[in-house]
Image 1: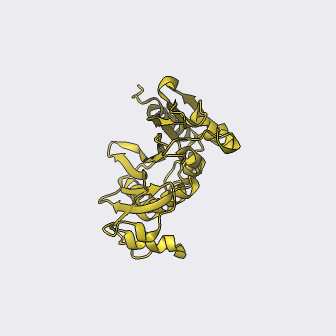
Image 2: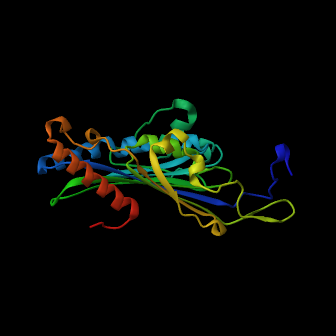
Length: 280
């Protein structure tokens, strides 16, 4: 055993820990104009610039360092951002000069703390040994007045860095009606005597890493495969406050029957996403 009761490892910690975090936001938009305005609102709220800031904070929370950034906004809607990260601080002079954002990252690492020279259409961030990525998927259908917005975030790390530490920040960064999370530990590492370790931290549920006040707002279930170090949790919001789901509309202007109908349909949409199947 090493200092503080920690297992002393031989060489690099070869365990790979991957967190896939998905959220769904539901909204009611009845007219074509409202649907278009909803998509435009989502596209502006979660553009690549803001998503880059969210991923930077994720990187800070898990104690990693950004090596390179890539981002892209799409037409007609949606955005993607990828960050390559490292477990340890990398000296700016040691970075690959061919990196498309090398100057930006060098400025950041030298303590300026601001984005410099970032083109509006593309940014990529790289972490050594690890990466963080986000993709957005606004969705609506002309025959349906309930629209949805999905965010997919993947955090893959090696060594002692744990992506689970960023869960509460991620949940709080989005309007999350339905959340699905997958966490997997792959590979193995060895101690000084050559004994293999397939897990370097205790975990029996992703819920252990989520704030209790957050869990109180959701119904949550686990589907775990402990023998393979695979953990899955999905959550659905318990209470539907109709005003939170009407885009540019006031529920007080609707009749009681309409409000009840809308609440039921929004609940059905959330349950279908939660269970992954259509309900009739």
